[in-house]
Image 1 (tube, rainbow, N blue to C red):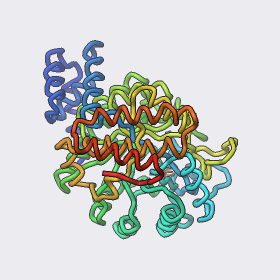
Image 2 (tube, rainbow, N blue to C red):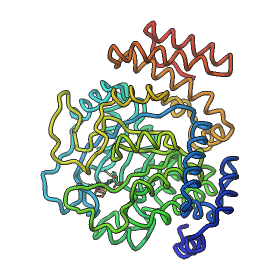
Image 3 (cartoon, rainbow, N blue to C red):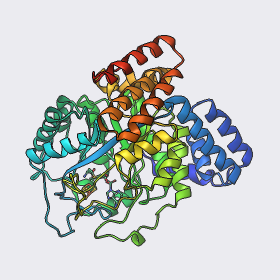
Length: 453
Ligand code: SAM
Ligand code: SF4
């Protein structure tokens, strides 16, 4: 599926696209016409500052047209840092000598309750790879513990590439998205950064989604750890991987994450020659939005407040908030964290992030309705492409935000937030949906919960 020569050849041919070429591609992108590999390569190489601004602007317009003002919120939950792999970029790698921990079910329950108290409904469960310490049954039990003991409604799972049998178990327990980052699509670099590791088998890793889909999972999320290899190569590879899945299974990635390499214990950023600057990072996000308009783009707290705010307007549709990347990292009181997987840059609380989003006219969304109504895989894509998702999602976002404001907001948010929700509800064009939405908002204010379209 990933043919290095083919991708390299395209990148060589589009090194210096003309302004006319870029203009033509942008016209087509605006109309949401499919872009060729050549087009995507050219956009990644555009050099004229005015045209680069235009790429950013069109990405913002597409985001607004498809997703409206919503920003989906989630938090990661790390339950174990035991790891048999030696990924050279990761603080949890085998060679780093520190006392490893894994949470027991009681501790997992407590973490879920703490996350619930922050208002979260959606988690990304993160686990290091250790067949002995954290076999699939431990992961399954942990998922059940969270669902049974908290109001967390959707658990996305980010665990190492595994077998069809293991994926079947994940499917049966009812996960949201199965997330796996390819880290890099460059085979040589992949092998180099995963020395003597289970994870070092490039083809097994690359075909993990095929096995997950064979096992019945129809919601998968990809990602690249940007900074390991040439970002242009990675972006084209992501697009090719997505097309491969679409052609084979009728649906591609539900989400793409864009983690950027950060300083971690036992590694120095100087050892990574492909580190990318903010300008290149913005290009990655905006070109992805143009290339795959219907795929959710996820930005984590690895990035600063400033970059996150900018990119939410230019294509990003999901963000994590209030994140901790150490095992058992959520505490009632502030605590010092000893073993983070990597450094974080946006340390605002969930409440602060939500208030900032609302001030900028954006709707933090805690909606999990699609997944609970079975709107996943090819059904989701069909609705997304018809634009129907917008009709359902914006009202659902407003409903979950109303719940958030009432249950977790401070006085200031309660005062401004409800006004914001009601004002937004008035802008819904479909009269029937608007009436129903206003009725639901009133019922939530009166104490009902979990109403959705
Ligand atoms: N262990 C599993 C795996 O590797 O797929 C799952 C989760 S791992 C905890 C989550 C992701 O963190 C990795 O896929 C990697 O992309 C990212 N990561 C690791 N080290 C990082 C670093 N130094 N900076 C930014 N992201 C990093
Ligand atoms: Fe382990 Fe995942 Fe970190 Fe690699 S990235 S060392 S597999 S936790």
